[in-house]
Length: 115
Image (cartoon, helix red, strand yellow):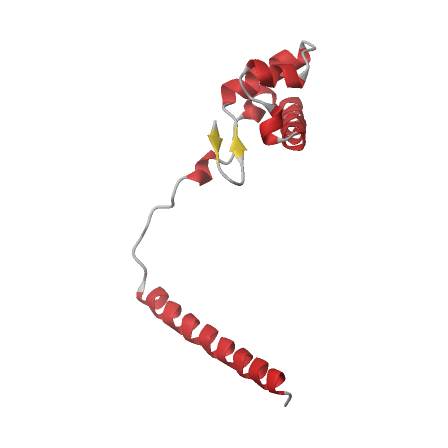
């Protein structure tokens, strides 16, 4: 399991166990608590959404549907050398952004003065 401020990623083993127990008739809250997940900490809404997502994935693809499809995106992309054209685009884009920002600030200043 991985936890961040924005998400909780449950282990595949837990998801498989959850689905198995759920379809045997076990209540979701009991399954979570037996596995040391306390719903009061994460909130019932988050748990309900996870359950719905897992049931839907399981119905579509079986156990393979429970695998986290985001895993390949969690790693940092490999860095590569920029081409000369890409190196030139960055400062040009920054200059363009700063020019637009300056124009906006000028207009804002005029508005505040009542011009």
